[in-house]
Image 1 (cartoon, helix red, strand yellow):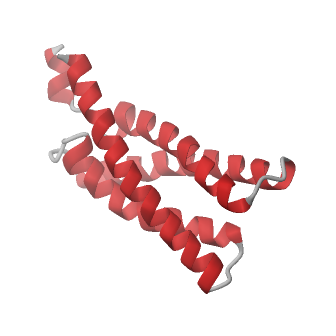
Image 2 (tube, rainbow, N blue to C red):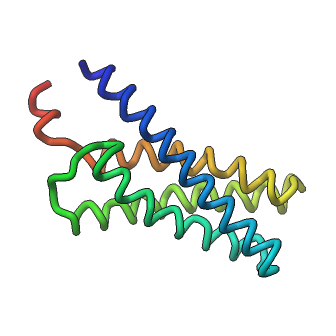
Length: 136
């Protein structure tokens, strides 16, 4: 039962993660290509746009814990976001500034760093279903 639940959450996370990646990519593209912002500012804006979308989908569908303190979960979600975002931002800087990779390729690869850290932290800390956990 636990494996089925974990698989279901992971599949939903990938679906919403894909939507968030599209939101992030669109915002990054608009800011870099149309508005001519630096790739770092575009990165920040793209992740903030996806963050708002991600919280609601994660709370009500991915981890399906609509119950619980909205304030507590919001704050924990922001902490998880901060860790995941800092991880991907450092990876982005490393890829562009040290390894000399293309800024767009590096933005794309950073999504995977962000996604892995974000999923683990939100599953284990932010959206823990205490009722389900107690049944095990």
